[in-house]
Structures are given as C-alpha cells and as structure tokens.
Length: 365
Image 1: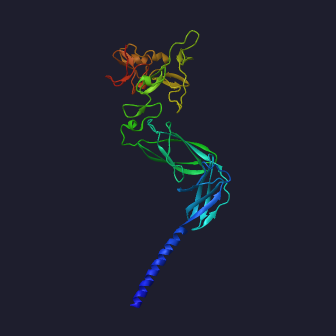
Image 2 (image 1 turned 90 degrees about the vertical axis):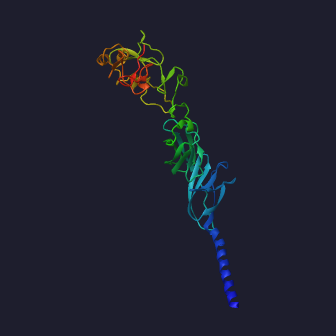
Image 3 (image 1 turned 30 degrees about the vertical axis):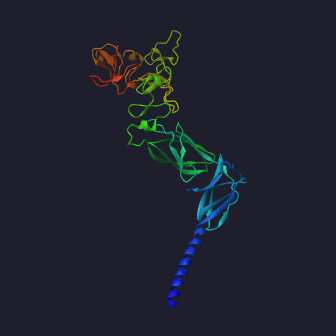
C-alpha cells in the first residue's frame, strides 16, 4: 500500500515539474529591444517589427523606445522617426533577455506616389492599399486614384489593393533613400460584374453609360463650352478645313496652314500624344487625325481638305466619289460618303449608320 502511494506521488510530482517547466519556458520564446532615436517627432515616431507590424511601440519625449514581446532570433526593426525620415535596423534577440541597440540615426525616407486607374474609367476612390509587413495598412485612394505612401526606409516592398468591384491585386516596387517614386497602376474590374460603373462609379470627368462602362459623355451638356458629345467622347467643334480670311487669320482655335494639295485652310493645332491629365486637350475633331501637329482629314477617308469638301456631293457610282478624293468612297442614295465603324470616324454632324452597303457616315440635306 505504501509502495503504491509512493509511486502515485512521484507521478504527480513529475507532472507538476513538467507544468512549471512550460510556464518558465514561455518567456524564453520572446525578448525585449530597447533603444533611442537621435532624431524624432513624438507625434509620428513608431518602432515595429518587419512582417509583424502588430508588435510596435511609440517613443517617449527623449526618443527612447522599449519593444516587448519580440520573438527570439534575428528580426528587423521598422522605424518611422519623422514625417520624412525612417530606417531599418537588424537585431538578434535571445529569449527572456533585453537587447540594447546603439543610438539609431534615421535617414531620409522614400515615398511611393501612387496613381491608380481602372481600364474603362471606373472610380477607384476608396480602394484600400497596404504595404505588406509594415504599419502602412488599409490606406485609401482619393477620387483621382492618388495616394502618397511613406515614409519608407529604402528597400523593396509588396503592395496589395482591395476594393469593392475589384479583385485583389498586388504589385512590387523598390524605393531608394530620399526618393519619391511614381507608380502608375491599372486595376482590373471583377469580371462577374456586367453593369460595372453602377457598382464602382466613374472617375472624375466621366459618366456611366448605358453599356455599363464609364464614358466621357452621353450628351453635349456634359462637355465643356464649345464642345459636343460624339461617340461618347467630348470633342472640339472649332473650324476645320475652313477658308482663311484675306489677312490670313482664322477663327479662335485654328491656324491658316498651307496644305499638301496646294490650298490654304484653317486647321486646328494638335499634339499626337494625349495628356493623361486632360484627355480632351489638343484632340482633333471627329473625322480628323493629328498629322505633323495639325488636325487634317483622316487620310484613310479623305485625301485632304479639298476632298472633305466633297463629302455629300452628288454621284452616280462609287468611282465618282473616289475621283473626288474620298478614299474608299461609296455612293449611297446618290450622295458620296465613306464607310465607318463608329461615330468618331465621321466628320461634322454625320453619324455612323447602317445602310444597304454596310455602316456609312450619314449624309443628310
């Protein structure tokens, strides 16, 4: 009986020792890092772990910090000191111990200047951006799809984007010390949404069209003064291929230019590249293309301004229209016109409409 009791007590003692051992070992799996910043702003200064941003602390009035609960082993500190300075510090932590790092001198930080858009002008305002492994999480884009992220110590980072109507997206980028890097990104809209813009809304300057996509306009009133809506796009209605005045002047928005066919005409100046900030700037009117800085009739339809003047001329057959300079011209209802695929290819007030010979630019008198 005594022997049995002795064995039972020994077993209980071993269990108790094992439990105590577990309790004593728990603190050995974490440690504490202490240090001090040479330069800091108490309003923004924070110290956290790379890839464990939830382990963080602030600094006191002297720039001192004490980061507790740090896992044992090698770790990197992510330090934000001021609005424009930050740094990373590598530290090796032993379990249950305190590590004192020498005074930390922050460096000039880098910034990502994000410029985000969607493929068809859907609104990206409110899309949330996170820099993985850092305290910069759940930041939101503004109405123009812009956001400055930082201060960031120099290095490479993974960014994630999450928003209603957009599948989660990721991107990686690197930034150097004191660098402000612009990142232009395009987010895809979730494929299951047909009427997309009714869910996301449209970017500034765009409206939701009947197709479910964002467009520049659906009516003239949505365009600026002196502009009209054609093919869901705002375009200038300035003088095109008009005669120059006797003094060689033209109406505002056009210049008197010598044309390849030997005539002079008032044509609009243009740039062959479109500014992302102003999609309408220097854009040619429908039916025109930018040729060497001048808006001239689309050469695939009209062989110069003289040919454009023959649009709608009387005809008996297609050959007559082509002889007048309408490339690929067709004679429909005894009037010269040209084939088209959309309204934007048709000059003036004409529209792309179906006919017996396929889609053509309408001619009405």
